[in-house]
Image 1 (tube, rainbow, N blue to C red):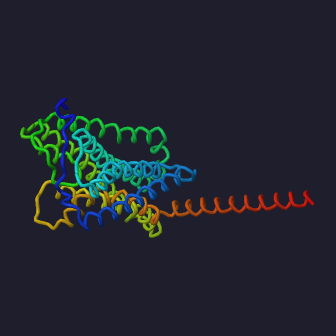
Image 2 (cartoon, rainbow, N blue to C red):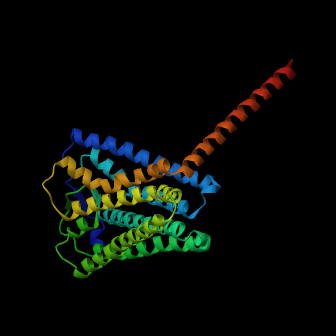
Image 3 (cartoon, one colour):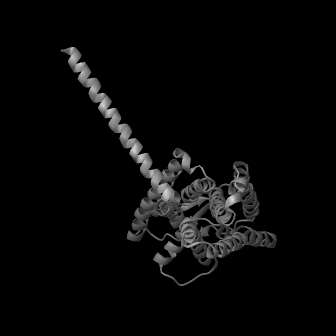
Length: 329
């Protein structure tokens, strides 16, 4: 990034003038962001506090919740600020950081969902070897790869984008993305475009192929199993399938919105632009909280424990007060 770019201010034209729609979107964004934070933090606390959930699937789910918070926090607070502010602007450096965080959120989410599919594949297709394959050391290695490779690869992409000279200063969207920043430049870097295509193949196409392959194998194994085993496999895989399909659709909407210009209403444009950031981080913990029996049981267990502890403390305090009253007499 050149020194001349450090103090550049970019302006967003996607918000339009202050209106009732802006304030309505602000309220919706605030409620969704608050719910997203509460839902993901609750899920993370439940997984941390219940030792029975210290399993590979829930370790990956814990990291998916962290990733969702990163994606939401990178975009929604700034969107809410611009919705109610008269001047919708952002420093170029902050825009580059936002692009990096959004890309990390998207690629790491796909990586984590791929690891969860692999966990389901080993659990159902190789149940006797599961504990030998999914060891704590291997889980740490897989998580390291899921974070390290995307962060380093995307760091290079964002660096290439930041080196482009800036000759435009308006973005017709609600937040920064890599294509929007590239379009601010009058120059083109074909190597950066080629590198971006390679990243899409590596972090989107290949994970999609792997997940589909995993579930094809799970389907073949399940068809040969008993009815009860089929039901158990379906129950185990349903939350992950719903999560993966939901995130893939959100990503598809985002790509369509970023790559193609359709004559859509402002409301539809607003929804398509924030859907990728707004919906998946909110739905992922809710889907697993509703569809996963172990998490439901853990939440109920923690609540019962807290209620019991509160009742015990109240009884103890009452007995102490009674003892003090008798002593004073």
